[in-house]
Structure formats: C-alpha cells, structure tokens
Amino acid sequence: MKVMTSPLILTGRKVVGGYAEGEALVTTQTISGWGGINERDGSIIERRHELVGQSFAGKILIFPGAKGSSGWSAFFHMTRLNDVAPAAMLFTRMTTKIALGAVVTRVPAMTAFDADIYQTIKTGDHVVVDADAGTVTVHPT
Amino acid sequence: MQLTDEECAMRDGDKGEGVAAAMDLLIRYGEALGAERLIRTDNVAGAFNASTPSIRPIAERGMEEVFSKLNLDSDKVVEIPHVAARTCQLITGIDDQNWALQGADPQMVEIQRKNEAFIGKRGINLFATCTPYQVGNVPVLGEHCAWMESSAVIYCNGALGGRTNVEGKESTGAAALTGRIPYWGYHLTENRFGNRLIRVEVEVESMMDWGLLGYFTGESVEENIPVIEGALGHHDLVKLKHFGAAAASSGGVEMYHLPGKTPEARDSAEAFGTREAEETFVYDAAARKRMYENLQSATDDKVDFIMLGCPHNSIEQVGRIAHLLDGKRLHPDVRLWVHTPRAIRSVAERSGYVALIEAAGGQVMSDTCPAISRSLPEGTRVIATDSAKQAHYLPAIANVQGWFGSVEACIDAGLSGRWRGDF
Image 1 (cartoon, chains in turn cyan, purple):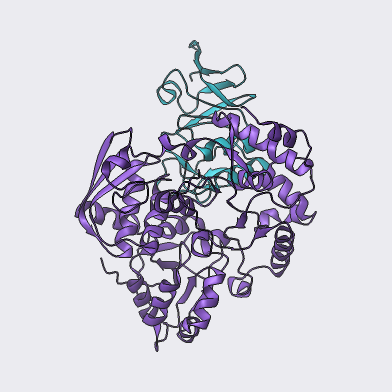
Image 2: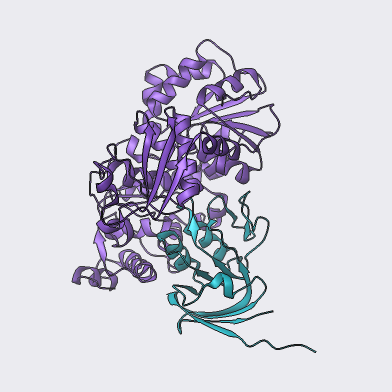
C-alpha cells in the first residue's frame, strides 16, 4: 500500500514568473554555464561537479546559483532554443549571471525561501513551482 | 522598478523598436535582480559576434535577427540602431586571418565577417579580445560599466576600480542600445567592500604563483569579496590578469582588494569598509601544492599542443615567448599557439616577435582562443598551458588531457615534446 506523505509548501520571491512542475534535481554546488554545461543536451560537464554527466532538461533545478564565465546566460538561453532547458530554477544566491540567465531561459524562477531548500527538497521529489504566487509545493517520494 | 521619463519613452518606442526591445529586457532583468532603478553607462563590452555553428541558422536569416534574438532576447526581429553608449566587441570564435589553421568552416568565416560589418556600422569597436583593457578601453576609478567576460570584469572592478557586474550577451546588447544597466551589485559602493580574508603565507612572485593564488581564492571564497594580505610580491597588469581570471574560474569572484596595491584599498580598513572578514583562509605552501595538483588533468607526459595567451597575452608576454623560442625548433609532434589581441599582434609583428615564433614553428593567433572556438589542432590529446583558467576549462570543453605550469615549462614541453613541469 502506498503511504501518502503530505506535501510541504515553501514560500519565496519571484525572479521570473510562471508555473511549472516536475522532478527535482538538487545540488549544493554552483553551476558554470559556458564550459560547465552542454547546451545541446542539458547535461553538466564540469569535471569535478557532483552532477557531472546528469541532465537538467525538463527538471526542477535546485542549486545555489551561477559561477564562472559570463557566457552563463547565453548558454542557458541556448538550452531553451534547443528544448533542453530546466523546467524551473530554484536558487539561493542572487547574482547577475543567474538573474539574466533565468530571464532569458524564460522558465519560472524563485529565490529567498523561508526554509532551507536543500534540506526540504531531495532529488526525485515531485515539485510544483508557482512563481507568481511565490510558492513551491514539494511532494516527497 | 523606477524609470525616468526618458527611460519610459524608450520602453514605449519613442526611440524605435530596437531601443524598446532593449528597455523591455532591462526591465525584466532589473526586476529579477530586485534593482530599484537603472544607471547610465557609457562603457559597454559585450559579445555581439555570430561565430558559432549553433548561430548559423539564425545568421542565415540576417544579422538583425541574430542581434534581436541573442543580444536582446526579443522574439520579434527589430531594426538595430547605432549604439547609444561607447561599446566594444570582446573575444570572438574565429581568427579572421588564421581561420584555416583553426580548421574553421569558410562559410562561418563569411558569416562572422558579415556580422562584423553589421555591428561595426552600428558603432561597435571590434577589439575582438577578452582583454579590452589592454587595447584602449581602460575604465577610470568609479566609472559605471556594463562588461561581460569574467576575467575582464574582475580586472575592471579589482585592478582598476571601474564598476561593473558580470553582464551577459543579452544585457550588454540592451546596454549598448540604451546606455543603461540595472543599478545593482557592484555599482553600489557598499557592495564593494571585502567580506573574506586570504592570508598569504607563501611567497607569490611569478605569473604562475599569481594564477595559483587566484585559483585558491576562487575556490575558497566563491563569489564573495576577498581581501588578500601577506607575502605578495611585485604586482602588474599581467599578474593581476592571471590572478583574476583564475579566481573567476574556480569561484565567482568579481571584486577583490589587495591593500596598498589596488585603487579602492589604500589599507586594510579601507578594503573592509563597513564589513568584516566573516571567514579567513590561509594560503600556504600546502595550499599552493594542492592548487597545482588540482589544475593537472593529464597523466600522459607526451604533449601535442601548447596553448598560451589566456587571457590574451600582453606585448611583453609575446616578446618573452619569442625570446624563449629564438633560434629553436618545436618538437615535430607539437603545435604551439600564442593568443594576443589583434592590435597587440600588429605591434608584435613590427617588433619581430611574430617572425621568431613562426620560425620556431609556432603561430600567433588573435580574435579567439581554443576554449571559445572549441577548435584545437587536429588530433590533440594532451595540452599544456600557463593559464589556470584554460587548464580549468579546456579539458572539459575539448575532452583533452591538460597540464598546467609556467610559461617556461610550457615552452620546454613544446621543444622536447614531453611535459616535465617545474613545480
């Protein structure tokens, strides 16, 4: 018999509006755009990154934020044009790279949460992001 | 976000649809950041080039579409007017002269030339380098800029005291057409003070030392602002260029202070201002060794390709390489490329440095680098470079093994065909 776990609701600040749901992909390591991802398949390529080889395409990407080259926005922009963008971005460290990247990737994005997103959300959880309402609903698996 | 009457008029199309699209992006971007307003800028350094294969289908429909989609994030193709702010092009994907050596597709060369004619006509200066501060764009203390290129941004903020965030392809496009950028982050004095301390306990003297210290700094502080004190030797443009590029690669460092050396920190108190060091990191001989080891991704000591000039070399660096190669020949299995801005290359030619490097079997390249172009000499398996930034990125991008060391160790590998290192 399946045990139903009650969903958790987090609130945060809208960065880019919109609604998305999907499977969570969580990392506590920042991500490089240019040189850190393959924009053709949405995978992480940085040698020493804990997600190396994994794809964020269609996932709710939960990560601290951006690092590295200023090509960050252009590379995430290209993931949108190549249909391999994440479904949403939830992050904790606001920078110009992540803000512009989220804007041009045109996916719901949020930051400044009322709880620790890395503790609350685990990879594989089903997550509903309503950026306009400022809420993230987590259905643990 | 609060807009002035002039900015509202731009948004509403009074200055044409290109400027309106640019203002629309700046508003979306400013609101994402939580910026209260925009600020005027008359110094933009961006990437307006069309030199990657993924751009080709768009470029074939016209340069207006390239700029609209990729530089303004506009779905509508808009007419692109003359720039409103002083603007330059950063590094591109193809060397306009040595493109055949790079193995570039002649059709892409044509597309890049068409694009350069398009942006040049609109007033964008074609510096075509990651180091605009080496060829005539040297921001002054307090100047508000909108720059891309992480190694240039950290140089602008840390070494020169200009004020810029790390901008992107889209925000620099919008800034060029409007002369505006969100007033956020490093544009505000209170955000420029240090909040981390790096205590240097091992001598930092050579260019390689500064690169290793930069790599440690980025890994330690991530995107915080380090104040670096201790056993720092002589500093200059080249050393700060390498330090900053490394710190921006291993972390997200965009600003730093070297008390007594950099312009916003005559002393430690001025560097920290209203903040304090929330954490302290010690850079000692063990940390230096760890950084050196972290930068090596090679196991095979047989080297095929020497990559020098990341960030683009100064004239003195090109001269040094020419001197090290004078009268010698590279190992027949090794290619050696030196990268420098086109303007510096012309000085290097005139000084005889290009002839010396070519006589030894090397090449002097401009406008691009292997990490940006993703093109290396055919069959490259193992590279050697004097750049911590290139050693960090190129093995992942090009799927090659990488050695990192001093310029002397790289030249030695070029001549012998073997990596011996000199740690």
